[in-house]
Amino acid sequence: MSTSHLTRLPPGQVLTAKFPILHYGTIPPFDPDSWTFRVFGEVEERLEFSYSEFTQLPKVEIVADVHCVTRWSRFDNRWEGVTFKELMSRIKPRAEARFVMVHADGGYAANLPLDVLLDEDVLFAYRLDGDDLRPEHGWPLRLVVPKKYFWKSVKWVRSLEFMSEDRYGFWELRGYHNDADPWQEQRYSEE
Ligand SMILES: Nc1nc2c(c(=O)[nH]1)N[C@H]1C(S)=C(S)[C@@H](COP(=O)(O)O)O[C@H]1N2
Ligand SMILES: [Mo]
Image 1 (cartoon, protein in one colour):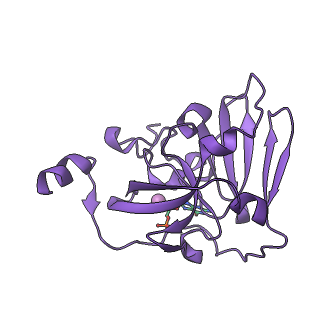
Image 2 (cartoon, rainbow, N blue to C red):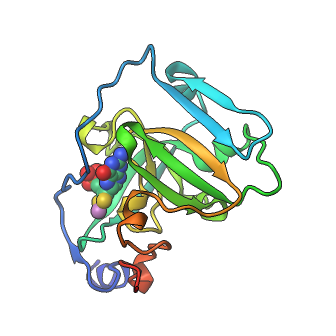
């Protein structure tokens, strides 16, 4: 176990068993009757899922490590939810769609290339370690992108905007690195 810990911990990170809570703004209220998940932008058809439609989508369990840009990592998080790929099988992107802005309640957003989101381990999670996600960790739904720093894992996610050109999200506009690969320590952009 100790050697695998060494190889599993990206450079400059410290392992924690706790689960720190970090976000901008306040925890948004959740009403299952009015909650929707929308898909818009460079798609052939806009989509809208109700809460019950979204939670009826086929679900998976994915165990993955979390790496936060503030230097903590947490191993073996057991997420349950819907993979991005599963959702994508219902979306018809236009040929020019190459990037996605992931929007949350309350104005937070993160941008990602579509090919990164199509990785097998990317999911919209509603459970963690056998329990419903806690409100402060993104309930009722958060994106999880295990191979990127955790700011790309948008909590309280409400919509996906397909884009032909890349645009910066909340932290990318404030100097965080656009690519966010923990193994390459892509923490901040260099200008
Ligand atoms: N909606 C929303 N999602 C967000 C954030 C935020 O401010 N708002 N912060 C991000 C950052 S910087 C981090 S490190 C993680 C923290 O997730 P946690 O509070 O579950 O540990 O959420 C990410 N997702
Ligand atoms: Mo963060």
